Amino acid sequence: MMTNTYTPLVGGLERSVKTFSEEYRRRGHRVVIVAPTFKRMPETEQDVIRVPSLKEIGGTEFSARLPIPGWMAKHLEGFRPDIVHAHHPFLLGNTAFRVARAHRVPLVYTHHTLFEQYTHYLPMKAERAARFMTRVSTAYGNLCDRVFAPSESVARLLRQRGMRTPITVVPTGIDGAHFRGGHGSRFRRQMKIGRKAFIIGHLGRLAPEKNLGFLTQAVVEYLHRDPAAVFVVVGRGPSASGIKRLCTRGRVRDRIYFTGVLRGQDLIDAYDAMDVFAFASKSETQGLVLLEAMAAGVPVVALDAPGAREVIRDRRNGRLLKAEEVGPFVNALRWFTLLSPARRRAVRQAARQMADNFSVPRCTERALQVYASLSSARRTPRKRSKIAEAVRRVQTEWKLLRNAAGATKSLFSKTARAKD
Image (tube, rainbow, N blue to C red; front, side, top):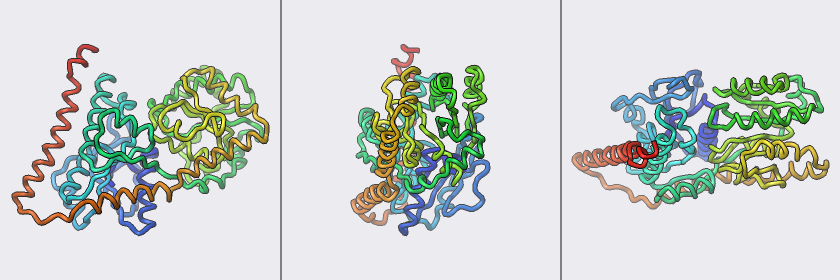
């Protein structure tokens, strides 16, 4: 497994790598994870190779690996993978392609991220950056033996973009039972939130791509209508200050509770305390936090987007809104308070049942079946001469260079100049 982000970062991609690797190991497989170094990394890790990296690139919490010749070959010496799995189409994704070619084993790539939604992190115009990232990820997927899409919405999008490699929908599983042992009353006591207060909850990385400006406006409007309601925000990130400003401007700052990042029982208790989970991101490919909330029996109000539309059944286990409009979002939050107790229990139960469809064993089995089919289809390579191996290495670098050149060319296309 090769990924540009991993613990201690908290997000859907990092959780996916961790969840799958732990389940593979539980079933007797060996998994080596290759990831950059980060600040506040765990002191001990099982089979994790940390690549020397530049930390906190551009003022973010992300790192970028340093290209040290021969470093990867030295640290992977003696490990002979049956599968190489890339979780990004660049940086360590390129390394994954080299390693797979060197060992002549299949390469799998999971398209975790709608990169065009993250262009604000790049030093170029948004339209050009989106075109560049789309070209990079599509071309990289076409170098692989199989592409995993976390949802059917993403699989359709990749095919529309010209992904020719076979695509299999493999969501990240969750342990539903794990999120059903919460003590919401304990969380309320710790946060000094009243027992009868209506809690609107949100959890995730607080970043611009999560559409938190719109979400906060809608919540502030709802709080004006319901004096008994509060807003609980779980997570951290650069957009926290913006949320606070909007709440202060809306004169509801005293009814907003920021918990920071929660883990373990504290996280489970927070979910259990929520009456509804509010979500406005359109950049997700699956939306693991939605499934976690639903596993805890919390209905979700979200915008219709990849990830959300796969799990929310409107008015059955939550609300799925077609338009990004404050009024309808506020009404959807209020919808749950108007339900009868029996109907409210039914909605919660439907949310739990949906989460059960995404169990860790079920998703893991699907991934392992793909690995097995790819490995069995790959013939045992015959030994090659040093010249043949050198030619193979040159071909590998040429393919990566051609992809990079094609993506770079898209930045300066006539269409781009005309629009700019």
